[in-house]
View 1 (cartoon, rainbow, N blue to C red):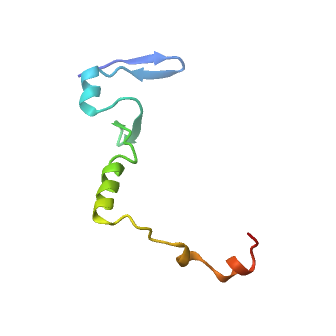
View 2: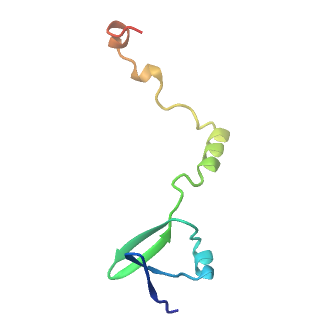
View 3: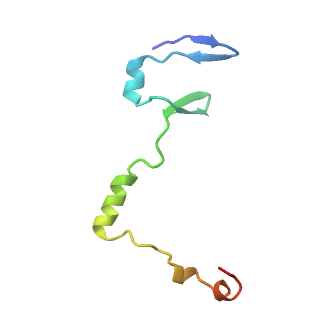
Length: 84
């Protein structure tokens, strides 16, 4: 498929057909990368995608306990030096 670069203010743009956007999952924001003279455009992934499912699985397996507790990080100067 060929496309034409268009002027948008002081920049330039490219119109991407809707079927291509739907196929790639691109909705709003994209990551753009230049690699070996090629422009790579990919959808921005939600960094927390799948966390809900993983947390539910952890809770079900009993893997959702605190790794570090107050006992692990307390120090004598907490009681001696600080006034609460």
